[in-house]
Image 1 (cartoon, helix red, strand yellow):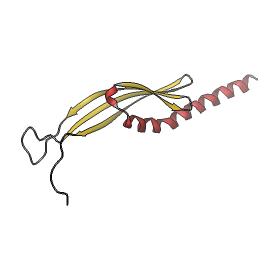
Image 2 (cartoon, helix red, strand yellow; image 1 turned 90 degrees about the vertical axis):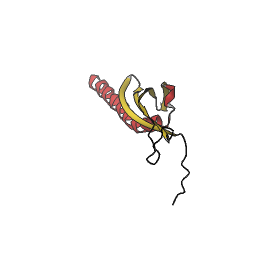
Image 3 (tube, helix red, strand yellow; image 1 turned 90 degrees about the horizontal axis):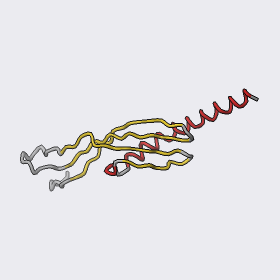
Image 4 (spheres, helix red, strand yellow; image 1 turned 45 degrees about the horizontal axis):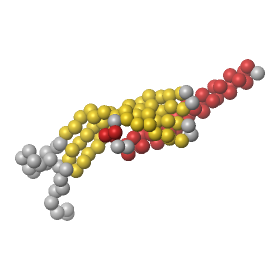
Amino acid sequence: MYLFRMGFEHLEKARISNTLSAKLVQATGLIRSLDLEKVSGTEEMGEGVTLKWNAGVLSSMMPVSAEKKEASSFLYHLLLYQVEFTLSAQGVSRDYSMHVLRYKALQTTNEPTS
């Protein structure tokens, strides 16, 4: 009976670990689509898996257009976020970290496309 119980516990831990591994791909896709200006949040991923995340801006810049040399020629605002997130299910949790690059168009170019 003892061996049966130990085998069941190990199989259950392996199942939970496999579930967390399978949800990692979905979690990275979800994080890329989240509003990271919110700084933190919690999402239910299904199958008892919870995603908790915190985001912070690592770097921010506005690249200048190659043709224009004046300061008002910013085309995009680039933001690099570092997102720390945890996937947890039934008492088992794993910590991860990833970078997410976001951009926002500040103005459009009036050049004809070829």
